[in-house]
Image 1: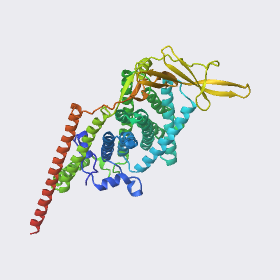
Image 2: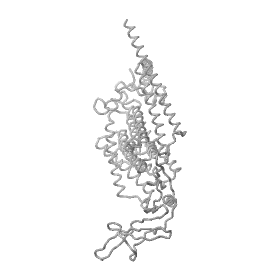
Image 3: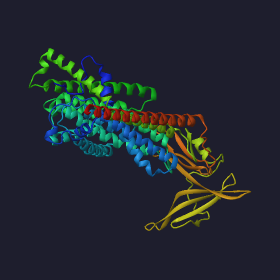
Image 4: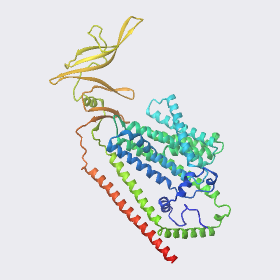
Length: 554
């Protein structure tokens, strides 16, 4: 009798067996079983002892597509593909991790379609509820924002998870874990897309370096943040009886809130690094124990009870030996199968595509642009000096309208008063004109200022502009520097100025480009050679098998 595949043979290295089972050839039936599991009665029975494998293929596919669209944007400057890259960057790690957790679920009574539905509905619902709470209770500083984020977001996700479990009538702890993970994954995908869009969008173009950095940093943290925080809450809700009166449920919920608060604290990079490591360790240990003990419990309670084979150690040992012999026989037979060699040829191409995608992402992450660049400023004074190209103006701040001075119309409902400053520059102050019908008089409110500079080359007029940071005036300036096309603030308060540089020429002979190009070409070349060799091997095996069959018939 053959044992169910997926469990390592006795004495085998578990990690080595995990990788072997992950990257071995999987049949169409295995794909069908995974995608239809839990959808009808025929696919709800039994246990799932197989190692996770589909998540690797999903991650490879999404990551390769992510790199392909990045390269399209880099070489064509067509930013119509930015939304696609933003979506792929947000789902590449999150959705892959959710599929891994689903594959670890030991029973077959849950479908991946149900998990995806919980991700979409639960993630969207928790996002909506969290934003409602943020609009009702607005944090006044970054510390309070971290506390609010921890409680509002975790409680919103917990509420969505509980509602899904109640509606679906699920009470298995591991199902609660998976559904909680689905809700957290949906929330994380929406949040990651927002972060990528907001911080990488530097109108009139997109900063691919920032897009890649946020996609990878948020993606790598996906395995220890929202998904697992909510998964633990879902597990606790189903694990402990009298859900709403059990202190253990509230304890796990508070733990997830606390981990979230610590993750968002406004500290320096060194302190945050230590906190991230501690939070990741706590939640990973917690969830690994939940999954490991839950799987062990399911396998123990449902292990071939009809024959009670697992009660007799000698029978078990004999079964493992027989399974090992059958596995060795299958391996020997595979080497005589043409499809076996063709599969490894396809695997070589897939691996090469992934490695080439990594090189492509590295290439796109290099901070260069054909005609644009940025300059960082840490204080208003240096920023104003750069924007005014070193010129100093003596315009009056918030100059009030002078009733006795000469005025002239400046458009509908606006008037202008002009005067020459101490620097010899003509300043034009524009005011909004409002008439008080009750009092029978006009009121004037300062609107903007223009500076007219006369030089040997002619007359140039500059408009005074203002830039705000967190609702407060950061600096006011006259835009003299003609290479500036925009500006934006970083999270740490630094101001980045976008500069147009028509004289920029990309030097493709630079070592960093040459090394990436050579690596890319080398991977492609080796992959093609290996693939052709393995295809030829499959042809020879097929021909040899045909010859042997003819000889046996004769």
